[in-house]
Amino acid sequence: MNRAQVVVIGGGQAGLAAGFYLRRAGLDFVILDAQADPGGAWRHGWESLRLFSPARYSALPGWPMPPHAGDGYPPAAHVVDYLAAYEKRYALPIVRGETVTCVVRDGDRLQVVTDAATWEAAAVISATGTWWRPFLPLVPGEFAGRQLHTVDYDGPAAFAGQRVVVVGGGNSGAQIAADLAPVATVTWATRRPPRFLPDDVDGRALFDLASRRARALAAGNEDPGGVGSLGDIVAVPPVRAARDAGLPRRRPMFARLAADCPVWSDGSRLSTDAVVWCTGFRPALGHLAPLGLRTAGGAIRTDGTRALDEPRLHLLGYGDWTGPGSATLAGVGTTARAAAADLAARLDAAPA
Image (cartoon, rainbow, N blue to C red; front, side):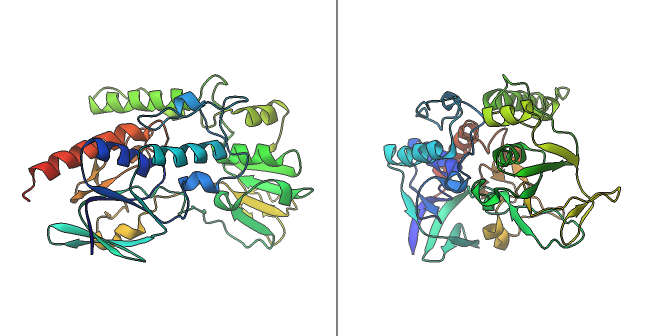
């Protein structure tokens, strides 16, 4: 059996940030990653996928992201290159090609079982993200055309000349709708009118706003309003260009699906070749099921990143419930530092 003080599950941006601070804390750790290559979920994004912030505001702890030429918003490929270089720069101990199947209790230790080995650890950081668990809403009816989620979209070429409905009023929906608009007839279906942030607001400003809100609520002060008070969509240059050109056509969310089209509540129909569901993700936490941590509402109770019902477990990078902006490159460092500090204190105090 393999052993480490801390096993980190996931080698994407959250796992790398955890590794940076675990190394600084002097802990013995390993990072297990199911993928054969570095880059995390960024490796699987579509070609035109952009960061919401310039490179200088999108760094993991310790090392700035190199600048990107052009309009300043780096594409996914630039992020992949940065993450690959980051793990080499800090010589992070990553074991690739091992998929974690479950985490189980074994006395005062935790066992992390993969499809290739078993690891024994004093503590575990789960940093598997959300990309691997796409969410599809329940919509009545059956559609005979092509349906795909954000995770399956790899570019506009396959949709040239087609009629496409893009569902979802967030950043992915806006970017994919803008990506398709030059080659396809696109209808953008959203539950409410899209809310674009001011053009001078990017991901750094959003992270600062989320952090201020978290501090205010923690201090018992009045809620100053979060990111949602400004809008939902960062107007990166391609999205801005499509918006200013009046593209794509926007409609309310449809009520059901027929074999050849969506059907709206007023009975109107729109003949459609493909539907792209940009409807978000859920945390990929199936490997933690044996620990029995989910409440009746489906959540895992946490204090910061630490699981209240299993203090040897930290959850990192899943969104605001594990720290403001923790699912972002710029934001995950703060919560990774806190998780590593907590583990260092606990493991140092624990009997050998």
